[in-house]
Image (cartoon, rainbow, N blue to C red; front, side, top):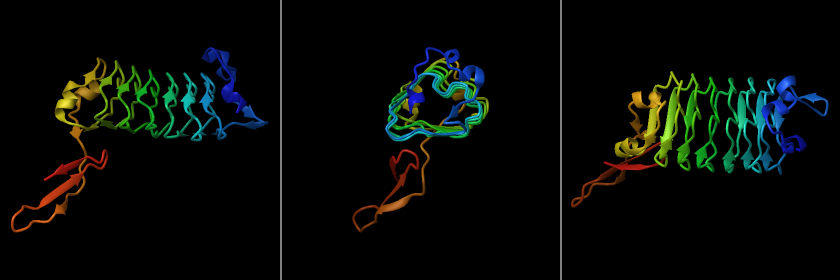
Length: 231
């Protein structure tokens, strides 16, 4: 609890910048469980903690500071509470073994470089609450193959998906017109070369039976955003 509250003014002000590991009560920190009641993880708190492999954050945590887990090269699993409302710049940049991340639904934007250089991320779903993806947010996520976006997104900043050379599937839960009107800045060629799929429809079901006087109705629900298409 106390370590999360320590204020470092830069990454190299944190002793882990040099030691690359942290002992808590004489135990080498490999799996981190933040106690319930902690609301904020300060800037650079676990900067360069190379031996950390897992981090579990309770529902009480609302804020993760700038570069809090920067270059935690072996961090493979992070549990973030859905109610979190801020993740700082470069918070998880360089977490090269991070394989999956559930972006909290309480966020409205992703800051600069927040998940950049996470080379093992294969799939990312941007929640409905999100309106903006910041500069270099997923830059050099070389293993990213699938990106799911909701129609609340209005801006994707410069280089947000630069270097995502394996991106092969973009699913947009909106219309073709919304996609065309979205502000996609330079450096996002991976998005511009892929033709997005609009929604991901499940199997259609009869929602209104045919009668002597009225035609029947079939509907299909998008498995991602739960939007409904009437057939």
